[in-house]
Image (cartoon, rainbow, N blue to C red; front, top):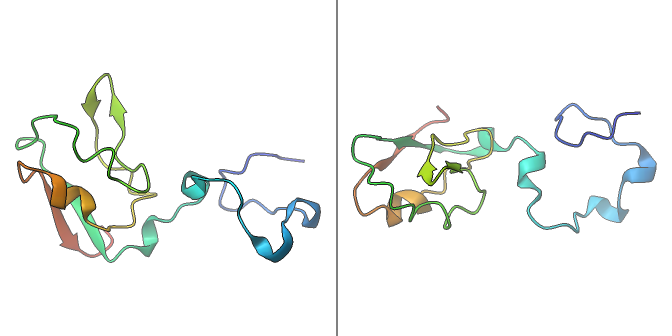
Amino acid sequence: MRTDTTNINEKTPYTGMTEGMQIFAAGTSKQFQTGEWRNFTPVYHTDKCKQCLMCTPVCPDSSIPVKDGKRLAFDLDHCKGCGICAKVCPFGAIEMKEGVK
């Protein structure tokens, strides 16, 4: 039996379900592809970005990956398009566009 919970097609056996299907662990959005829920999609303008990383800690879905001190493109499988990152970016490197992608 598979125990990988990152596969969206996973079939959880009834013994692994909680009463009322409640989730008790924090930060479970990485276990589910929630990106198709959004109405707005962030567009990252690399030419405007100064790598201040102010956008990274405010993302409620951890959809702004950072590697070696530099931010990367958005993780659109998990971004819900809230726009908080665009509001905090002092350089206008993030623009919210209507639509999923």
